[in-house]
Image: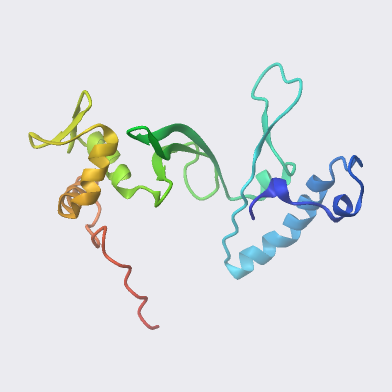
Length: 203
């Protein structure tokens, strides 16, 4: 559902501009979620609600930020993610993507309050090479000195974007780093990053 803030009650559609509908959207969301929760559970369906941030007026202490649609969605949801752009990604002077931070603010299925950062590139989505680069630096498989990134004494690139592009252009290097990284974290190697997903076997 993209997005909760764009859901328009029937009374608002049929009414005039300027008519007051205090709390109407929140009431309808509460009624809908009471019905939908059981249906979603029985059908084993994943439903994703995208929401928007608003600011409460006159807040002097604490965060003024809130989300639309009332409190019901916060209560009924199994997981809530706070997704924010923290910086832009540039290739020379051109903006090519955004650096994004995701915080888990609610989680009924695992530990909450964790966070992650990753790159979203405009022409391809989440950058797998960017994720790999971050994790390899964390595990010291790749060293960063000033603006240069190197591995085993060999420079990979100057600047993060050039290094990410190097990994993208050299899948053999990328796959080698991925294998080492999985071994360090006690995970199985699995398939290569460039492999197509296998078809599900017949039951």
